[in-house]
Length: 175
Image 1 (cartoon, rainbow, N blue to C red):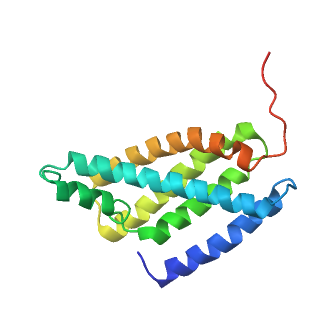
Image 2: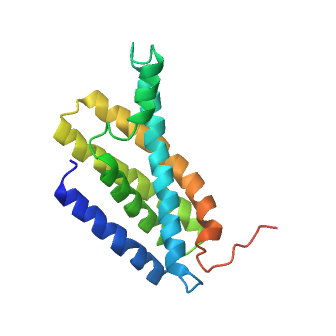
């Protein structure tokens, strides 16, 4: 799936989506730069999710990690075994970050984050599974990893983005 069309789509998304996010957020100092930093935070979180999935899959595959070279290969190739490569991860992270930054209130960001991460990751798995010829077990395994990753993303991302890109609404603590 690493081809020219995906690369062009990724470049357009990386250029356009932070601009759209910066325009839709309430006015703030260095708004576009903050949006770019938020996109970078989301990219790191998505990449960490693929890293975690790669390590778990490598650790559960028989005879794959019986040497130090096996662990090094697992750590080195963690994101490239899933069919999208680096441009696919950047595209997925851009779409997820855009959706999270659309939230008008801080309380909506976990919901937007979970939904966006789950839909985007499942969509990418369906596309890559169709191209690579996954069986039902592979789809179910990816569904479980996508659900766990989306839930973790929905919990962690809003906390990291709270001060970086505020929504403009005040967070009122309960009494």
